Length: 141
Image 1 (cartoon, rainbow, N blue to C red):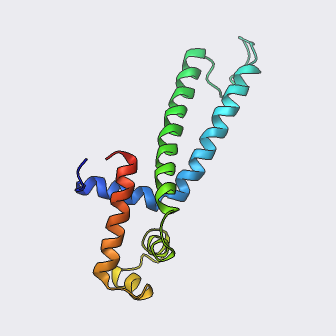
Image 2: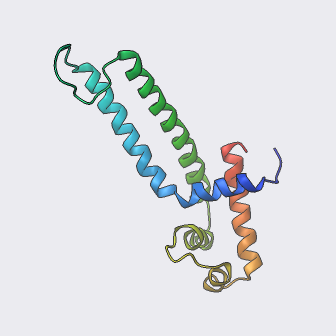
Image 3: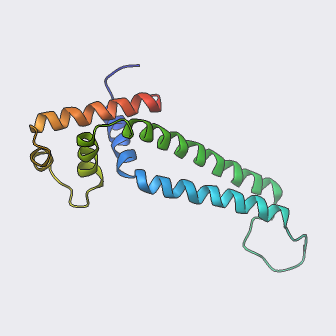
C-alpha cells in the first residue's frame, strides 16, 4: 500500500470525514429499515386482490432490497469504524483541527485554523494529511 493517495481518494476521505455525523445517522436509519422490513415480511398480508400498500410485494424483490440495504450498512459501518478508530486516538489539538476543518459551518481557512491552534499553517496541513493517510490505511486504500 502506497503512502501517496490520488487526489480523488484524498477528496473522498475528506468527504467521509466531513459527512461523518450524517453517515452515522444514515447507518442507524438503514438498520431500522432492515428491522422493519424483516418484521413487515413476518406480518405480511397475503391479500392478493386488495389495494396497494406501498410495499414491494414480490418476495424476490424484497430480498434484493434488504440485501442492498445490508451492503449499504456494511459500507457505512466500515467507514464509521475506520474514522472512529483514528479519531478516538487523536490528541485534543488534532481533534480540534478536524472539527475546525471539516465540521465547522463557517468553512475556516488553514490560516485561521492554524492561528486558533497556535501553530504554523504548514504544520496544520501536515497533521491533517497524516490523519487522512491513517484513515486511508484503515479503509484499505
